[in-house]
Image (cartoon, rainbow, N blue to C red; front, side, top):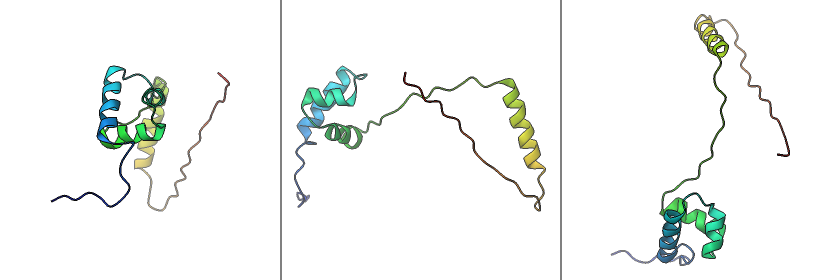
Length: 105
C-alpha cells in the first residue's frame, strides 16, 4: 500500500489548484504565467511548478533568425573542405565571436 509522504503536505500544488491551472491555461493559452497566477491568487513559482511538474508544459521563447546568405553557405562549405584536409600535426584554433546590440526599445 502506498503511504503518505512524511514531508510537508502539498498545499499550493494540490489537485484542486492543478485542475484550476489546467482550466485557465486551456481557456487562454497565450496569457502569461504571471497573469494566471494573479487570477488564481497563487504565487508565480507555484503556477510554474504546476505547469512543469504536473501538467508537463514547458516555456518557450521565439528566436529571431536571419535569412542565410549565399556567401555564408559558400564560406561554410570551404571551411568544411579545409577541415577535412587538416593533417594531424597541424594546429587548429577555434574561437567564437559574438556581437550584441543594446537598445532601449
